[in-house]
Each structure stands twice: as C-alpha cells, then as structure tokens.
Length: 214
Image 1 (cartoon, rainbow, N blue to C red):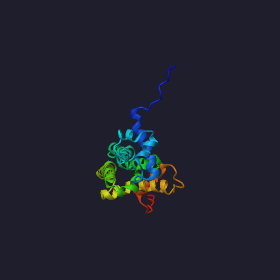
Image 2: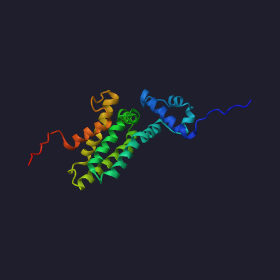
Image 3: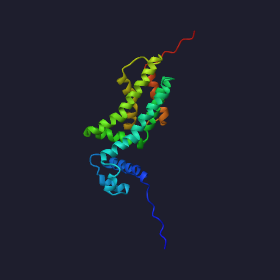
Image 4: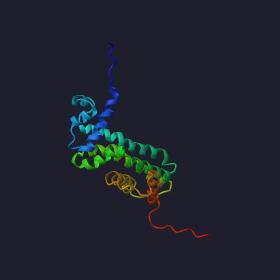
C-alpha cells in the first residue's frame, strides 16, 4: 500500500503563521501575561520549534510592529517623497487617507493598540516602535512641511506641532472605533473622513468670508 505524503507547511510560511498566532494571543491575554507555549500551540508547533523562528515574544511583537505599523510608516514616507514637492496639499490629503484607512483596519491597528497598552511597562518595545514607526513618520511630515513652506503653500509652523496634528487623527480614530466602538455616523468611508479632517487642518474652524462680487 502506497501512502500519500502528508501535507507539510512550507518553512517559509511558518513565521507568518506564528505571528498570526502571537497577535491573537496578545490581543486575548495581553502581552505581559501571554505565554510562548500558548502561541506555539495556536500555531501548531512545539515551543522549541517556535524558538527556531523567534527567540522571544518581544521579537514576535517587534515583527508584528514591522509588519503593520512599520509598513504603514514606510508607505507614508514613500508617498511624501513622491508627491510633497509636486503638490503639498494633495500630499497632506493623501497622507491622512493612508493613516485613516489603515487605522480603520483592526488587523493593521492591532500592533499599535498593543503598544499603547504595553509600551510603558516595556521601554525596549517602546524604543523599537519609536525608531521603526514614529521617527519615520516624523521625518515624513517634516519633509512634507518643508516642501510646502518652500513652495509658499503652507506657512512655517513648528514641526513637532505639525506632526501631532497630522498623526493624531489616525490614533484617535483607531481608539474611538476599535476600543470604544464609536464609529462616524455619516463619514463611514475612511477616505471621506480623511478628507473632512484635511479640510479642518487646512482651513480651520473659523468661517471664511465669501468674496464679494466685483
């Protein structure tokens, strides 16, 4: 009797499976109380086999950050590099669309949510997140502001204040929708919400006077 070869997962697919298992366990149990053996069990591996791919649960969380928030930061960086010098206003709107759309995805926002709750207890994780996400975002919005000021489109403002204005809406949107389930009543499309936020950033809240007919 000829036995059919049993199905084996490709080795290159296992890191992805481990990270999916780690994310699920971190979300359910919290990072501090999550156990490597629980992650291994969820991934269908032994604890020893899991360590062949990731030496610690900190390494798994760092990989999750790189996979989601890190990739998002690099996407913003590429967007600004290609569009800021051409049309700063369009670049600003596009940046906000990228952020709001990403933060509307529970899968993408899972790692940032974990960092918000765990970073204060694990300074090395906070340092990793800052280097691979926040510092990249800061460079991007700084480049956007510099290009806009050079073209005379924006006035010169403090870079750190501008960074908080640009990144803040994404974080707030993530917290409101994923933690408190307070979703927009009308602007249900992330792109529409991003455009509305961009309008407030660009034009403020004070009513603009209509130009008088000549």
